[in-house]
Picture 1 (cartoon, rainbow over the protein chains, first blue to last red):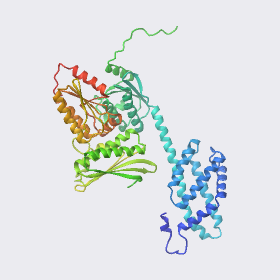
Picture 2 (cartoon, one colour):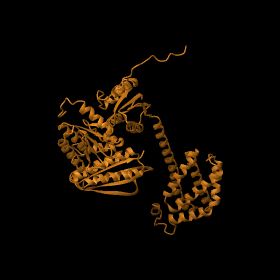
Picture 3 (cartoon, rainbow over the protein chains, first blue to last red):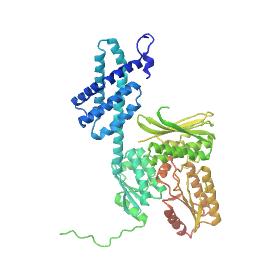
Picture 4 (cartoon, helix red, strand yellow):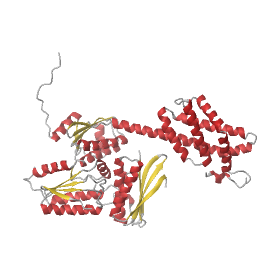
Length: 299
Length: 138
Length: 127
């Protein structure tokens, strides 16, 4: 711990170092473990935290957290705590536990332990202060480590879910042999753009598509970064031997493409999806001929 | 080093053609262990290929250092391409995308920058070149 | 690392088996150009399915191959570029412009058939 160097000042040579203060404090916390843990679990229930978990579960997790907490105080290293926090988060997030609950219980533990220190050293105010000097920074760091671990785990899960949603929202449809349609709806952010490209290119490969109709009728606008990405996607498709017909280009998006220097004359664009499919069929050598009248609606 | 290092770094000496292939294969392996999706593996390998080639062509000897780094829980791969070659007299010029897409002139640096999330270059005439690039897991 | 080059009718098919060093690429280029003249091939297919990286040098070399082969009256088509590789190439700014590409060997042969046999009344020396 870096503060060992700062606090062991030469003007107070007879007093304990931070390390020895922490040792004393950890010994106390270990000795009082059963009592303090129970106290803490009681406060958690009183504060109506972790309501998604049963009392047995709360007690079990409280035990683990307590032991990890004391160990972090003792060793002064936080990797094990970080790993434990992530692991715990992974388990409790699907149960619906929220950030304020996790932060709440860690702060409650900090307070329970601090109160116990006040009780123990109440007759020696100076000693109490020195013990708190060692305890408080470490306790704060622990609270932060656990909270951040929890939040990071939540963010990871959210990212995973977003990826899954993106995949669902970019279908690749094969309508005819060698012809794929990719209808895009909604705003395309860089993540989605990247996913679009992957799905398009993989789709070309697995469907052996020669023409892809990329319909962006449902896309209101794109920024120049995404526009660039779109152009790159069309070029990449060509490297796989396929041509891309872009349909449904709004005037805004056309302008964005021109702004980034795309020669729209070189890019294969058609007004709407239907026109795009017809053009694609032409390119593939199809000719659609009406052979008889469509079935009559019943009167 | 600004970011926390996860595990040991991998050093690949770059002295010849064959080392270019070796460096990018090791880069691909490392990125794969990190859990990067396959598109990113190709991207990282291509960037390493370009950087390693610059070393072979212009500096004759150098090395590629591959690292897995951590930025507050976000994992990434860091590639440092360093050499004691002649250095780049005008870095700004080298970073311009002025030449044809075949990259027959120049060092392919703008392209490499497009491939990766972060790009840093330090080079001085007569003092060698160090290019550091990073790609983060989304 | 030698790239095997097979003759199939009027075409040459070079199938890359593994990662190629810059030297390997140059050798492939020279071998193809030499073979085209020797057997009077009308078309060349370079199958790069096995390449997990196509960088600026590989791209330049493939363009050189196509150009030199065209000067000898034959068409080149590059087949089998992997999706991830294609993505990296365009991000790097490489587009193989002016070089025909197709999805795989089958498509490549179909392309050559259209180009070569469909235009056999024309003599193409360069574009």
